[in-house]
Length: 233
Length: 257
Image (cartoon, each protein chain N blue to C red):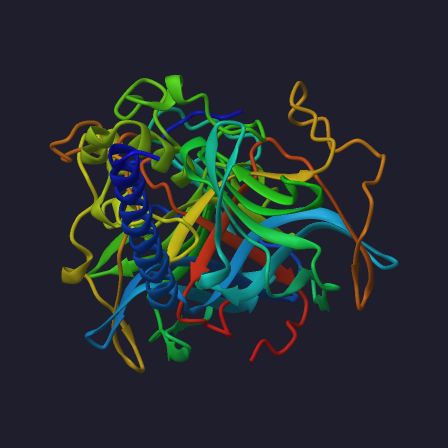
């Protein structure tokens, strides 16, 4: 089992395209109960589903520090490094169910990046927010079985610690996630902010998360479906 | 009968009447509280696991088991020295998704019940087959849950809690440890299946879970089936690292998935 900490600072510019799979439609989904606000309306412990549709041909490998060739399954970047796959070309949406009502929103383009850090064992919906790459925001998983997912182009379901963390990974920096309200994501239904509600700290001062896996006690689920997705509505 | 014993008899009768009135008052209070607590509720377990529904064997499928009931039917019981909350009244479904296939089956009545042993950090659905089957989520890899002596005070320690159910057990055992957890988690620690809850832990979805070899897989011997309108249902999931989520929605979210 790998016990490396998730890469501390992964710049979007550092993503290195080093390979692509054959072309096929692909759908990524993530699900968790969490606190979320849409266009200023707060939902407590809502059922939150995010979906990203793209094409396997646009999945790219990355190695940080850069390597050539970049094979995430064999690359050992060392402490603070990362290796895996990502896809940014596609469309993303969010579905919120709370109080018996359902709310939909589509992310505006060029924000959501599906990532899988194979080296550190985390995957989900990362983003570009205020010009910064946020590997743990708006909703990603790490640890548990997502730790051992094969890649970003294989159909399957996995579980893990659910993170919605600006400034991920916080524990390696001896701190906590930043306030997400200053970093809304843009959707066609207004600004979207996702909160990290279930956390464990190193001390009652609550100034540092216990680690970058168990620091979030919440559970989420990540799914990949290669091929045409059935209508989920 | 002398005057003294007669007076004593009257006093005893008066006491009995007072006790009876008191008991009646408590009973009425209980009924009143029961009515206050009564609310439609949906108990939901979310797990990735293996099994078979009818002729369809599924592997690492997304499985959601739901019991729609009412909080007024939650019973408080004592099991193995622990306070355990059980709700066994309602209609149950299972939705299984693997790849592009999704099937929802309705369970035949009176087979599963929602079960919470908060102090030991175990939550899920039990059945007549086992109190921990078809699906339990434990704070540790054992169906009986945490060893409280090891959990209490573990917050902030070398081996901290890594599951919500584990943290809940920690706080129930040592309320001071609540300071190590965020407020949202602490809001869930009073749960007794009578109110909204957000719990989760290691998934046990195997009747013969091998606790000595966590990644060996569930033994091939199938448990008795759970019967549904889509055929017989079995769960055979054993992965020592799988995590699940158990949710109690008191304002039912029919679309929760």
